[in-house]
Length: 313
Image (cartoon, rainbow, N blue to C red; front, side, top):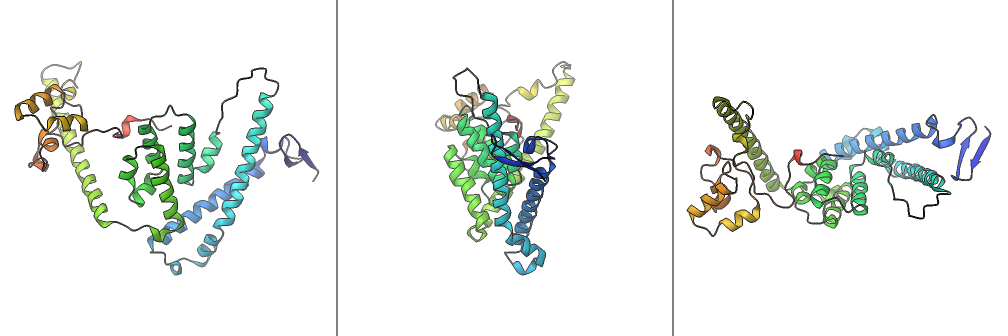
């Protein structure tokens, strides 16, 4: 085939691929990238299976062992391909900006394609996201933690780092104490030690959360029935808004030095009457535990959030 060199992009393309790598009809590069990404997914699945078996390679089939040996070469080939795509994007951007009389520096961009290509490797995607957050610091830390948690949910659970991620106080902590630590565990699984006590604590917390959700649903149904009985058909959530606000950790701390009467008054005035005062104030928590009719929800801090607080993407 006749070869054409495009000096503006530094790439070589066949003459029958009109437009080179930029042409959406150029399936050669796309097919190659899809194959490499598929290989990486298969390798990751084999690695996961190996971890679950206690790193007993003899339990793997021969073809699976052979695939694991190709990991480094596949990663290098995929990295090289993505690097070329970045060069193409940069060439197109330079071409579009050529001759522009505006002297203002154009904004830096990261293409959605790069993010999608990194998606099979969740830690690489998290790295990309944190780079964007640093580049555009208008994003709040709480939001950065939320999206990091969504991107790496499975890995955070696997390596028991979910709570540590939520408790991070800076982007550097997310990167160094969470993302880099998970990379280390993936590279050398022997460095991760499963904490049974921590797992039991997380299991109890999940069970308590499910119980609270069940209690909340029953409470909401009662309050809606009450509003209907009182003919508040235009606002059936009227009673659900009364005393529903979750107290902050600072507010709870300030309550502990007050008398019982003052605590009850401030609790009600603060719109927290749906929540159990004893759960937050008493040293041993609420003695009624599961039988308590009030909500047992942890006090809010700067990193607290629920799924509905943010919109992914």
